[in-house]
Image (tube, rainbow over all chains, first blue to last red; front, top):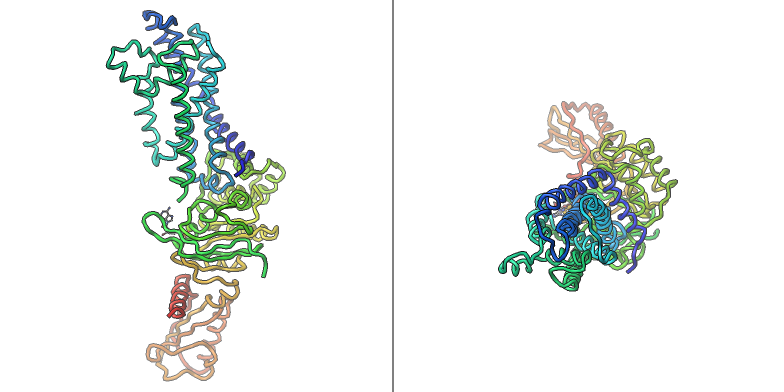
Length: 255
Length: 315
Ligand SMILES: Nc1ncnc2c1ncn2[C@@H]1O[C@H](COP(=O)(O)OP(=O)(O)O)[C@@H](O)[C@H]1O
Ligand SMILES: [Mg+2]
């Protein structure tokens, strides 16, 4: 089958360059929002909150906040990355090039995931200005962040192929992803919820992501790390499967 | 006969919704030629190109490029095919030279600034290389698309309506450019709905309508078959029969002898000359006329003729 490194590199670098054109916004915006969250939740409310699982509340919300940005940025970067060429018609070039699903994915999704990782680094750095935190398992944390960034970039890629209008492009992130993230224990431990809600929360997939990342930071979490890890890898695999199917059938790509 | 570079057999495309845009198309393109696919809007030209370039999924048929089956060997084949699309689809915010360099990389070649410079210069884009594409005029945007398609030095180049929406001067430039690419050994398949364009540029012409290839022939043969001149001369007094001096010309007497109808020529100007000779002969014979309506047959007339010919042949 073969893999075209040169093509992949071309796609990857161009996608990153595109982000650089708006580098100022893409860096400043998350720094600003993260700072706001820390001021409101960390400083204003956090002072009145008890420690959670032995972790100071300000530090407790760091992984959740990180995930909040990671999910929305990975999804929107990757979905725009593939939606725009479809919308403007420039996708003809990609379709006529000697590249298949592997090159396209590594190029587009790799670039989207890279952007997310850069963002994660910026957010974690910003966080140090507001709270004291340390990371119990730094390598696992980086690995988990990469896994989440890759999974949601893949998910965004699917959205970008599925959407046939800007409206649809925004609908899933805004109406499903964002609420689930807020309800998924970003700012609280699901142990704090009274029982019917606690059980209900376990049906929210984001809970497992937040919990997994929190475990890599503080060594303890709401759900077992392996369950979190397994579900994330499973999600990634499903996304890859869907994209492979899309390329095989040409759905929404080839007339 | 020279080597075949593209061989299409039984290519059919039915779009979802049932429209048959290509109907059992057979076509073979020779290495090094300029082939014009001539047909009106909606004939299936873009669909045909799309099927070869991977933008359209064929419903049936086989395609062989450079001797290899496209369905199985698409990677190797596509690396050697270039496409300039009909629509001016460009990444508006990208800089010209970067857009062209990207195309080269996308098609699997190492960057080569000297080659990119040569391409940009040959298309008079060198001065504009640092401009964003959106700042360019329509004609210049099309040049950028051509530069992108040439960036990976393809052996087979598709130009989908290269001169649509381009002014006369640019159109001449385009024709020169296409000639220059042929000199370099690139095989070119272009589509057009202008007879003159096919005539100006192509070695061979294929006529397509409603998804069917009606005929494929050398340009000169095609033009002599298709390039008809029709002239209708209105006579002041009806004639009973034509004078002997015009009998050698393809003329008939119509409208109860009140009109002389000429149909002939081969697209080379012979028709007009014969009509001039005809009017002189009429004047000489003392036959007065008060009107001449002369026109070259349109693409549509030609299609009607070809379809009638085919149907007559099939019956
Ligand atoms: N994606 C599509 N879906 C449905 N019908 C299409 C599509 N693309 C083209 N067609 C139809 O197929 C026919 C051939 O179109 P096309 O190949 O673009 O013709 P041409 O390039 O000769 O103008 C037209 O009737 C057109 O409306
Ligand atoms: Mg067309």
